[in-house]
Length: 166
Image (tube, rainbow, N blue to C red; front, side, top):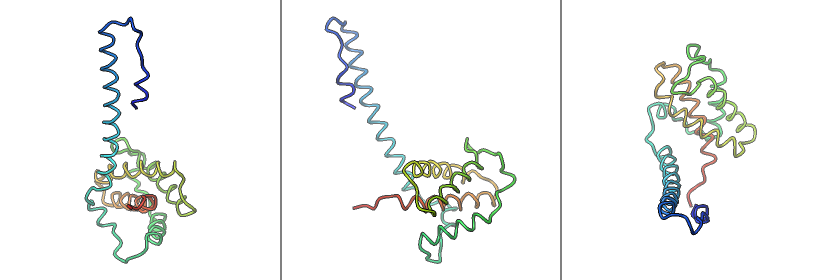
């Protein structure tokens, strides 16, 4: 970022006010970039380190199945489940639920058929953020469990793309 603002040069005849404004602008750009970078890291860490919700705890598989088996089992279960009729065409906090369902289902299917590319992974993380936002706001038991299962599948897929700590 420093390289971008360092090359901004004013002519020598510019007034002191213009030079002062330019220097202030450089500092604002430099600091806003660092704040943006810090905020991005902070949000990512808070999403990864948040305590599990009741839906997450309910979705934990106590059978000890491997993540691959669990994902395939949840996928088959999800394919047999009916979409909640009362939530067709409904959006929660600006998230269109039926589109979110279709997006995550497509990503899970792609993962089971060979894996996701970089854009698929990016879309998956956006879907997880949307699922985290809406699952707690859904007031229907069936619909909440439907989307909690969807979120569990999305997180199982995402876990495959998180690098291990070294």
